[in-house]
Image 1: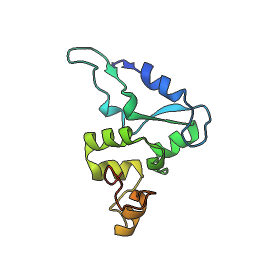
Image 2: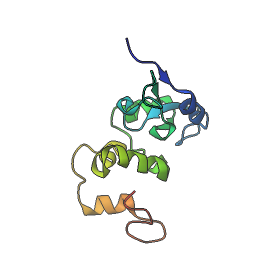
Image 3: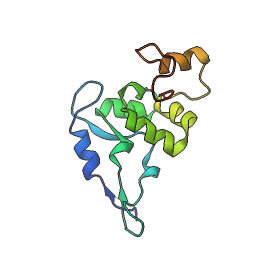
Length: 127
């Protein structure tokens, strides 16, 4: 039997609407359900941390799950930082951008991380 998940806070976040188009949204896991953990040690059931989800409309949720959609521009700094904390910067970049292999080169990585203010890495690193 699967553990019950507490989606309450994640579903509240999804009420914001799809981050891409504003349509009604679902709570899409940024990295996957395997990172849902009990809220506190010893508790039964798993908590879906709102930092682990992004609100996406059903079509984009499906495309993201199929590794066909880049959500990096949609994520907050806090969501990006949490993904990096969980799996490291390279694995987070690959999943969030749906990149299957190595970045194609320094230019691709630089283009995805440039700060509008002009600094190469931005104030908080490559995301």
